[in-house]
Length: 265
Image (cartoon, rainbow, N blue to C red):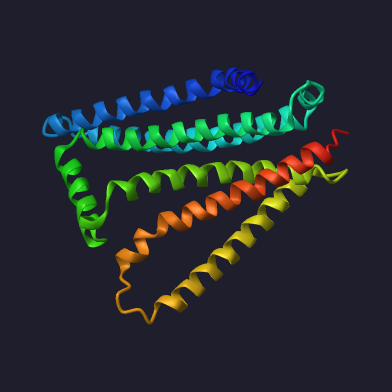
């Protein structure tokens, strides 16, 4: 049943989100072509500089619009299909609540991950239009890695950093679903209460994060072997731990409201 729900979610989202991502691909190609044109025709066409600025500006705006638009659409999709008019049909199906949550979270997180990969790939591809800019960027990355102790950064660290990012992504998706679910506990102004819950959760997260680093620094400030790299190297551990805790807490809250306190009136 989980597979069928995920298939249905993909069908309900790809018709809008796939074209949006294709727009990003087209804008990347246009920006890359314009950058190459400027590189080889600057001496002949001075006005092309203005065109390059406009194209790059449009490219940046489209990138932000696709990412933010995707997030807004996925939030809207979760709300309408779970607690809106479509929710009446969804919750009458012989489907386990866990499957409903997992299907929506997996699909939403997948689209956000696709957006992130495409944005990073788009930027890297655009940099290849000018070799000097590309090599400058790579040299800067290598300098940062070397400054942080790049010789000690292993494949395990990179893999675990990626794993930590994935868990943090799922935690962010579940946080939104939990806040929307908690907002349904009110008989009036459900959306407003959902937004208030999100702000409250965000404040609590900031406080907990601040306390964590304060306690950590208090224990480490007298350790002579502690360096910037050791602080950086353990960030994937902190991110992974926070992501796992967030996934568990927000999942339980979403499940509890959806299964025990469901109110579609």
